[in-house]
Length: 203
View 1 (cartoon, rainbow, N blue to C red):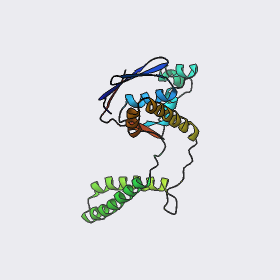
View 2 (view 1 turned 60 degrees about the vertical axis):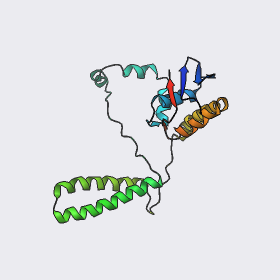
View 3 (view 1 turned 90 degrees about the horizontal axis):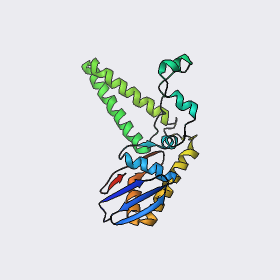
View 4 (view 1 turned 120 degrees about the horizontal axis):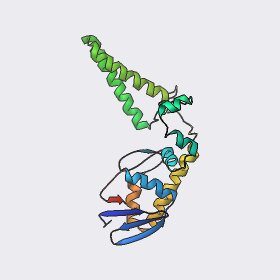
């Protein structure tokens, strides 16, 4: 596309899109809200459900709990703890790379045991254990990738569809910009905008 930069102005109910000398106005939809989040954080991955949650209203009682001190929450028998994120599942290419790394670690382990290098062996065995655990989680007994049912699939798909509709509407107004964003906005479970030759500014 000819324009070297694109400026997006977010208003209360509409989006103003400036592409070179052309100017467009679009309705501010959920898809635009999600897309703007990606454009404001180029190169950063976003989880679909986190985008969904970030733009939903928080019930008043829960919002107030976030504003009181930890000691006050403890007095109400409410305690903070770290949330253990789910294991990231992988595609076949990633699994192949993990297997190759595991085979290399086995070779290195044999060499370190011969050298009696216990310090280096400890670090290696820890990485080996983590990779073995990872493969055990994502593969079945026959060595194939397991099928994981996504209990939030409907919500995730709603984010995907909203962004997809937004990209389609941009493409109808400005086909060149639509093609550019089509190749740069990655959507499904993990979403991101990978910046390219066009500078996009969100005002």
